[in-house]
Length: 354
Length: 123
Image (cartoon, one colour):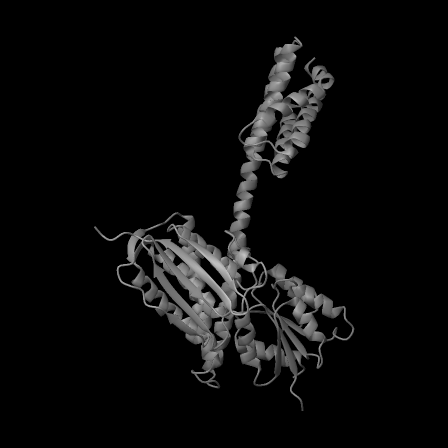
């Protein structure tokens, strides 16, 4: 009886279910839900009822499959649950209006199908989410291993060449070894910063901007000298304080300054200038990389960078951005055509100690 | 006798330089930064006597680059050594299946690389 009612009133049920889903305020209905999700669910319900001889296992499988199909199309769990609810309400309302008698068994089947669909969808969502997290973790480990192997490979080749005694410790081989070790150190620091960020391990403290910039100057001078780049760090006035996670901020700033040194050609210059207003501290890192390709400044300003960035800048910058955001700041990138680019780190300034 | 020419293809600048440092005293070394650049540089004259390539590179990876080289009559006999961080069994099989002379880890000792290069060049 219920199945015949569903077949005969398919169009009316769909129209009513669509109206309910459209009227929803959160999550907002999508075109895909209205044109695909709801009709598929209703048709599968009709089909399942036709297979009255089907075992409950087969029915569960069909319901679960539909739930998982919807998730694969990009529907959220909330959308799936609301869509099922919309169809359920449309069927019962219309049956009530038309005074169609639905037997207790049919109603039980209907509810069972609905429950199975939702359970299947949620289970599939959890499974896919787990897979996505695992895949993401694998991808990150792969990136880390790739970066470590390149740095380690270059370091080992340079070290072994030095050991032969055929090249001197002051030449290009030693410089390559130093650069590779710095790169390894950078990879380790970035990884630690990422872990701290993701674990929410923030140790907020008041710190002197002068001390922080001096620390960055010391760590980055090694990178600058290994690439024969002049690093100019302007002194910061005392009494300029900020609040944040010192380790994260130091790693982020060092990453930006060291990248600036990396992309500036030999005998070029990188400058770090810090200015403070009443409530902001602005650090400008200017390099001489030659300028960015069209659109790159905007791309680098996006919150998430692509891991496939061939120079690795995007990935490091992404972690730097998150590290600075964790202290209430932000990064902007400005292109200076033909010359280089300027990274501006803007942080809230703390008031004087009372 | 002119020095033999080796083309080093790697997207990592430091790795290119490190390989160059090991080989430059004996061979003439040229560089390419990915599979596309590697294929183009391989076609340039004088043609390389040996190609040392990374596997994982942007745009075109090392295996695809070697397939293109093998499919080009003028280049198909150039020996190739993969010097890569990809050291899983599947990667090694994939690398060797395109007709490479050797498959080395990036963390190999310079002596191992030098030995393979010498043998690949018939020395």
